Length: 321
Image (cartoon, rainbow, N blue to C red; front, side, top):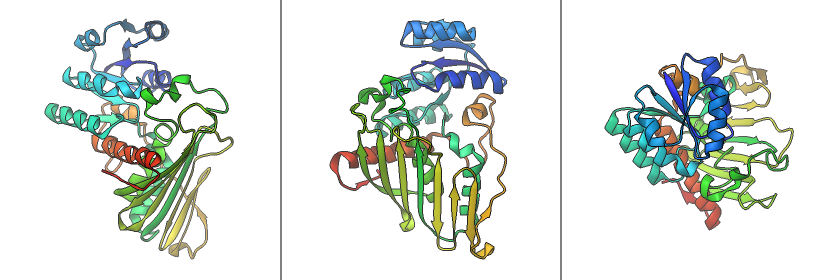
């Protein structure tokens, strides 16, 4: 299909453009950006038409879908207009800053009889696909605890754009950005979240959290820990899962120990990676069963984020509502 990139505000926008061009049968034919100079720069780079007016872009019947990589605060308006115009929509996480906004998007999608695709990319990685399979197999028993740490050095390395620290545009700092990955993975692995308690700090003094941990209570008594930040170096993503019959650990590969292995830690043989959510969307592929990136996934992620930030503000445990 013919795709329009909607803003190069997000650091992933250029990479998404290249991914579409290099890994799919679709084309990037149009670009809109709230910053005209930035939009024209990328339109020239990728040989696409630049639109100064977003509504005019949506009127172009040759454009089949849009990739939303604007400031998160602009997502709802841009997405609702795209849905109304009959365009297929792919969005950077998170979908919107509030549950209320997500529900408006859900209602619009239901009226059109369509769905949205969110960039929940780690669901496609072999390590997490294996973890999901092992959890569902029952080999780990009843899951009691899981912790994921996902960090980088964007703040201390000074490579994140300054607008990533804009509370109004982003809704927060590290947790709502990089911390989205642990949040949706823990939901995927542990089920329905009930409450969240957070501790956030601002190490580099930019006004939003760059060092953050949220404790999540799940149904059946499982505890999840979502750890993230922009102030750590040399830390690969880490996931550990504990159950009543075994444990799994992901760090540069996957190892696990269960009753079936006699308690011995063994190295897992990983499945093949799935195409990214963007590639699946651009190629018109249906998500694999159990590996979804749609409106319900997007809505739950925002529910968890809202609870996490309410907890940070109140200093108390907050319900996921």
